[in-house]
Image (tube, rainbow, N blue to C red; front, side):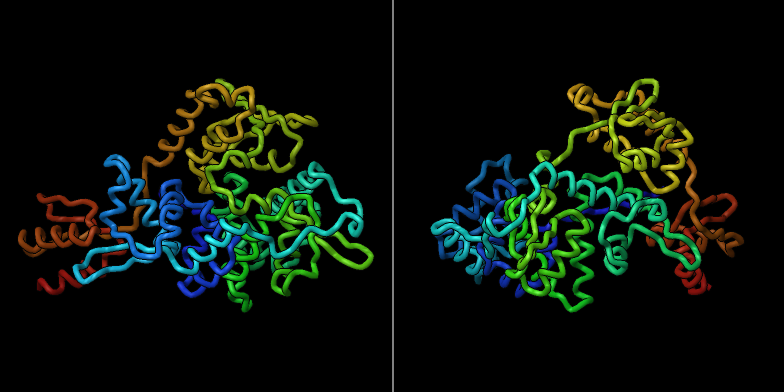
Length: 451
């Protein structure tokens, strides 16, 4: 059975998808230039810094000489990324040879940033104006509580306490593609929704932000303006208070939506209101592979398929129920087992065996995370075997053709079926064949022409 996959794009993928004019406008900010530079592969960073004070195009052949022969694949990845983000502009001369030069707008603003330093568009508020600010520990707890409450609402909104300030329109945006809503039926998780719950927190955050930005265009908000604000937000210091009056109307609206997700905390004073970024906000410009943002694991899996999760979180318990049988829950311990029935239920909901294995490995308790492997091999092998056992037979809509007038017409039909990729089976002796259902009309038209 084909599996649905959620592609969790980061901010730079969203930046690369912007039109050229909006990208150049984005690069007017030196902070955005720095954020883009930080996101690049190491070799791409080297190329940018190497060409930062070169105002003429550099030929592609010359740049290929900058790397050893075994680095050609990394060179290609770096060049492709720089072209996608319009950091490099390709110049083709009369001899059809390519050269590259830095985008002048990006080049000028990055030069200014490196020489004079960058300044945030707003400074933290003085401590004598703000009331007692939450500690970093309190802020982390608040962010986790808000984020987990959102995920719990996603799993089962009817049984979750309404701790977050979601308005109905925004919850629909955040849950778009993750929940299926049918008339007279309660919302249910889609295959994408089940897979979303097993993703890393940063990947989940990027998926939600991507949906939020894509929906903003329908409300007359420029996506480039939102991306710019969110990237700037990632440069703010967590735990510091910033005045809401320094924000534009679009930014104020975005801040109230992001507060419901736990990216910022809002507070009110006697005269001014302010927002306090959490670590979720500062992680926005991080890489998916950055392990520093990942939380400490909590799951121990034994060779007898028993599962122990050292956690007090309701969310962890609900996620484990997606693929395991939870037997009982103590104040700080969840005990369960991975069974054939629980896995079949997960597979039915669109969760793959590899996703379950990856979740167990990424969330392995520190005591077992240092071991190799962190999840017993007999458990991972059995998960894969149960998945393949379920997928031994694949149902495909198809059509049977027989009673051909001659062997020549039969063979021509077989050849045509192969060409269009629709032939599933043929029997030369009985002169019959089976074609995929989607190729039926093409095959009918072909046979009519043969007559």
